[in-house]
Image (cartoon, rainbow, N blue to C red; front, side):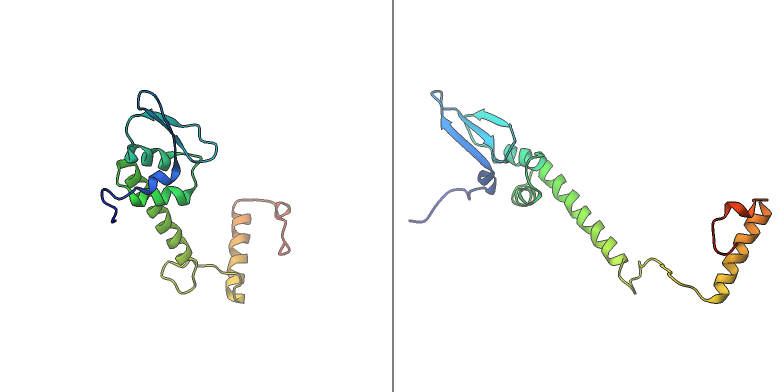
Length: 142
């Protein structure tokens, strides 16, 4: 017999259902280890639990992402936007480290003799121009 009705939310996988009380209320608690959050209600609301799971400090990032992708509430949309921006930012940082990238930073480990001479002259001009004693420079060049 085919299953009918609304598709089961993945949020239910991360919430622990307690027994039904005498007044037909049920206690639901967060399934994240260490989370003390509980809610007693007559009806199940996946959206409010999705909001809690996305903002819960005890829930792993993988679970948060899974819940945020499967539901559409204000908090889950904000969470998805934040992780998307973080992923794009880290991707840009990784791309900029690649040689030949248009965002590659100039990193020079060595220079030719002419450039070294210009650097030395600039340092000497700075020291003499500012009347700094050569003893403050701890370098092999002086």
